[in-house]
Length: 124
Length: 192
Image (tube, rainbow over all chains, first blue to last red; front, side, top):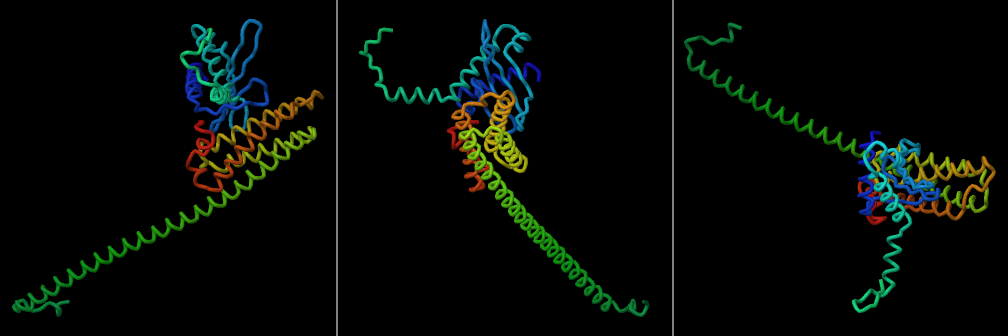
């Protein structure tokens, strides 16, 4: 797949995921999250390095066979800057939050706490 | 032939013959038109009947397909329950066959139901991939003689997939919603 299409896919996945329109779920592999579509599934994962973390996106066909495996380092080496690292990190973060239900958990906790009022002395 | 032609001098007879000939022509034309209309009407009626028969046959085929799909989905979720029990009991060596069996069933449902909604297909595709990943993990564990995985985590994933398949099963039992509308959207609050 040409890099431009992959970058476009990452951008759209990120945008749809941020709007809560992609159903991410945990997988049996730690730190790997999956979203399924009508004919394909995608997974995002992080590879922890000594200097920095790398973020990967894999595309699988309907039988679960790997079709494409791309990392931010592949994309950024062929385009300027580290924009794809930022995009893929953001995608991974939103996928993890959706898969683990972090937003729902925050909403629930917040609903159980008293709301702040202007007179509350918050020292930060 | 010559006998039929009246004498040229008898003008009134000629006029009468011409009159009756005109009447006959008009009657023939009218009969032809009526016949044509009746034929068209019959053709349309036959076509409607054929269409109705085809629609009834298609409906019957869809019903059989839906019934088969429901049976296969039920079999898949039953096997998934069995997989969870085998996880708990630690019968790892028999598990890869069970994962394969469920994946094949789900693949068969996917291939046999091209009219399924995208949401329905995504449930099947997601479950196939999750089961494939679990199968690979267990196979790796068996090959290296190590612990194949954390049972609670494995069973949590299997349960979630089984729940999704069960929702698809319920939607299929209602038939139309599964094929034409996004059941997953209703179920998961706006995913996909």
